[in-house]
Length: 84
Image (tube, rainbow, N blue to C red):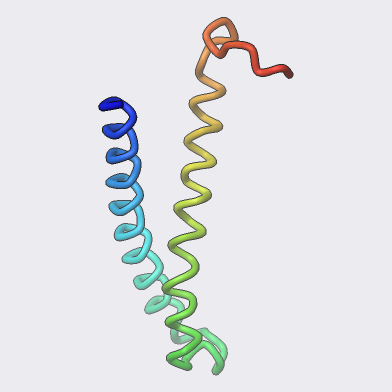
């Protein structure tokens, strides 16, 4: 039970760190894009929606990429039977 809780705590910690880093990256990208952005992008509601949704989507994509890389780097003999 302890190893499962430690794994869950590690996943939550990594997700929180990724959310903070992704939020900073999205904020910096929005500031850099502001001079060329359409007029609708300057609305506060649109900016808040982007700053909320995009980091969450980025975390999902990062976890999918990590899972894919681990799957690709693991030899087939250690993967177990997946029924594929």
